[in-house]
Image 1 (cartoon, rainbow, N blue to C red):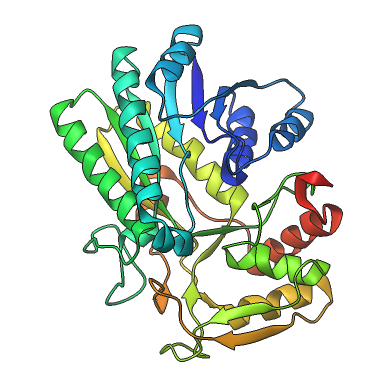
Image 2: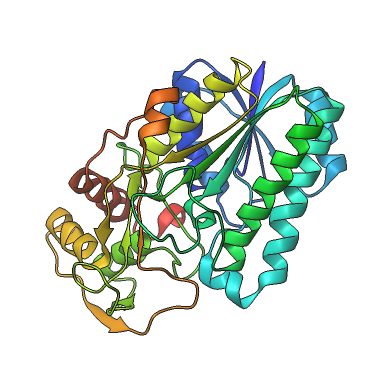
Length: 337
């Protein structure tokens, strides 16, 4: 039996394939390559020493999905496919609602047709909206401050409703925080299209000379230095969390929800300083106005995932930054290098 990874050519997907392979799972990937590169999968093949079954297709297309399920013996699905930039979602919300929600509905409909009962959904800490306190645990009230977060929240609601109508299913909703870092080999990492939307790839591109300076959005938050505080988790730790979630679903738990984070919050300025230590360079930055949809603080209470999944982040901040720099310095133009 195989694990289907939607969006498997992307940043988190490629790292998760490596962890799945280590755990003995066969992997099938579907991806439309709209925000990823086939080169990433080819490099994963070199890392794991085997070929990966890959289908270039859009998860929104049910007919294409049926062909994959008919050709492969899919036992579980990890659903990464989706648009993910907060700022972009504010600018073009309908594209986010259509792509993220329709793709999930198409996927679960086809899964039911082929009696595939295990689904890991890539959710986000954005479903907590602007939390009244930190750290955030899974029982916190849910809301969202931007269209991207709303799509994740809506999909969670859809999957909860779908589970109650189909209690034979097993669904893991993984609310993860801010993935950074790269594989230790330095051959795969985060390679966004155009100007990065996330903090760390922006910092690395300033360090490598592709971008002139970092804009820090918001310097008047009620935090240690006025800049936003987030929970940054190494992408390989996050990937391992998905493998543990698959193993959990194999015990038929029904529907479960977990935060995947470190439990530590770092400000944007602290991240800049940590990366300067890793790369040995000064990062130019300017302070700018807050962005719509951003919040002051967001970091996890990871206790439930540790208790029920055995999940615990292993990488510290300096190591995360070192791995980011190893990837970016070896691949200054990303996979186009």
